[in-house]
Length: 268
Image 1: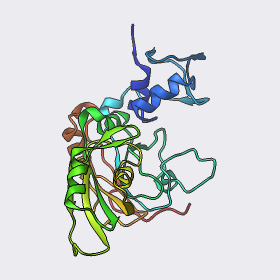
Image 2: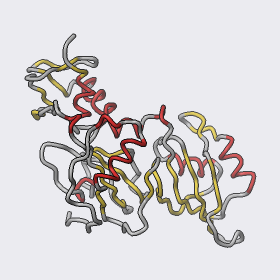
Image 3: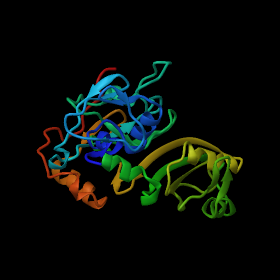
Image 4: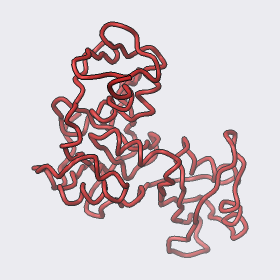
């Protein structure tokens, strides 16, 4: 059949990640030329595409555009969602506006976790960084009430059975401080991104996480100068390096980006 996979094209056009687009198609929220789309459908130039009732313009020249990448230091209390019945503050409210594109979140953080969030206009890049097949490490600074014993650290590395299967940490390292202190900081690394995984791992040992900060996602670390509630857009060289590190050099050629310095959060 001619054309390209609909979920892939929507992702390339910055509407969301491939998995998100497949889910919306399966839920019947996407249409092609007035007909409800099905998973596996293809589209081509000239097709009228609607997502959740809104018309979407597919970018058929996406390969000539460089993916824009934004780093955001999420504070506690913000949610990583555009739709919230409780109308809580969303990370998307704090990001710069785009025309004809959307910021796609690469992974999530729960409302009580702070730290690095990466946003991009490329669904292809987002899909690659989130997909378990590519094993992108997530590193966290975690403060544990009471601290971990050597046996508990080994247990985290060997694996802990959670309600959604066995989970394990790639590494757990004491992050300085007095080993006899009531609360201990650790650097804990995971190779997957399940919901609340760090907290659930620690809770499974009968302990409590009192603070949790994501400090790295794959090859991207939280810049020390980036304060809570601020964002930083990568310049063209940095964006190209990230795309290349993910093996996605075909996402596009560098395109000048004006904003490249940390900017304070916009009023909600």
